Every structure is written in C-alpha cells, then in structure tokens.
Amino acid sequence: MFRSFMAIVDAVLLRCTAIKVKSFLFYAHRLDCLIESSHTGWLRSVAGPTIDRWLRFAVEHDVEEVSMTLRNDNFYGIPKFFFCCTTLVSFHVSRCRFSTMGAVNWSSLKRLRIDDAKLEDNVIMRILKGCPVLEFFELKGCWGFEHIKIESRGLRELVIHFPKFVHHQDSILSLPRGNIDTLPEDSILKISAPHLLKLRILGNSVKGKFKVDKLSSLIEVELNFDIETHATSQLQAHCNLVKGLLQSMFQVAKLVMGSWCLQERANSFNYELCCCGHSLQILPFA
Image (cartoon, rainbow, N blue to C red):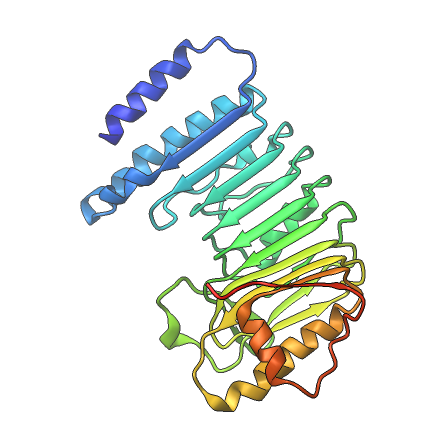
C-alpha cells in the first residue's frame, strides 16, 4: 500500500508547476504495519530516500511550513540539506533522527516542535544557534540531553513535556515510556533561559526534579506535571521541589498549577507562597 502511495505522490510532484509550496504535511500513521523485521530494511532503503526526495522538492519550492509524523521507532533521519532551508517558518517533527544533522540555517524559523527524538546537548545548541528568530520551542517526549540552555533574546516560550525522564549525577537520561525499571533514584532537569517570557513544564515524570536558573524575565509559568512515585519518604522532597520552583518564579504575573503541584504545595503548609498580588490559576483534576 505504501509503495502505491509513494508512486502517486511522485507522479503528482512531477506534474506540479507551482513556483512555491507553502506547506508540506506528512503523517505516516500506516507505517506501523511495516515495522515487522522483514520490512525494516525496506523502510530504510526505500521509504527513507523517498521522503528525502519529497523534502527536497519542498525546499526547492521555498516551503514555509513542514510537519512530519512517523509512527515507528525513529527509522528516518532528517537529511542534511533540510537544515539549510532558509524559508522555513514552522517545523513540527515527530519520531525522526537528528544524527545526520549538518550546519543549521533556519534563518526564518519562528516555531519549532520536536516529539519523541533523541537530542543531545550539542544538537539542541546547534539547532538554537541556527534559529535566530525562533519564538516558540517545544520538546515533547525527547531524551538524551543534560541541560536546556537558551540565550536567544527572541525566544518567548519554552514547553517541556516529558513522559519519562531520569537523572544520574549531573546528567539527564530521558527514556521512552515503559523503561521505568532502569531509572536511578534521583532525577533533575536543568533549564536556563535569561530572556524567556513563558515556560510550561508538563507531563508525567518518574522520580523527577526540576532546577531552573536565570529565568528572571518570566511573566507566565505553567507547572502541570506529576511525579510517579508511591514512597512516603519522598513527600518532603516533592514539597521542596515545588517550593523551590515557586521561589525561583516569584516575579511571574501569571502562574498556572496542575493538581499534583497544588497538592504538594498544600502539603508544605509552612511555606508562604511568594506570588502575592499575582494571578494564580488552578487546573482541575483530569
């Protein structure tokens, strides 16, 4: 079926006479049926180069929006030429590899969302340096990095959505769902972004902690995450976690808290919330 689909797309692109292609949207949800061992090699040898060819067509036609969602285990690596698409304004990519990344020149990119991908520190740094006008950056279910460091003055909003992440000493090892048994005892996510205006921390963490640094420009924060642990000995640690986050964000004008963070805040009843005079929104239980 996918072979027929590729042939149809190739035929359409061959007959396309448009000078510009504004959007390239690729949602390959039917690739799941091809993940069996007998098809894995075919996916890499045939489907990969085919997607490369479609992406090159989009780049050569000054594409502005690209959205790619692949529903298998990161078989596709984004080609080097795509990282020099200077007309790209919005990019959403899911379950793709960044291992073949070359120099990044996304000079027009304003919105970037990456889902379910391994991203090491140097990869994130190279991406951010190659996006001088980036305004919105979201990482959902990504892993492999230690520290999110944003120095750009133009990036206004950062969203971190971690289904699972873990920490060992001063590093982060973020894992896909289902690898809970391999987690060490302590976890920490370090974020530093001195010019950021909005920060959202979402999702379900396993034995996790957050550490924020140099976020003095924040005006809006959403803390809507929970930590999956049933150990009563961790209660005080969780209270201290939420307390520390709130202390580092005392200057924000709008604070949104999910039910878990609110409960941990309530458990620490001796702590005076430092957001007096500011807007506090409580999210209901799911």
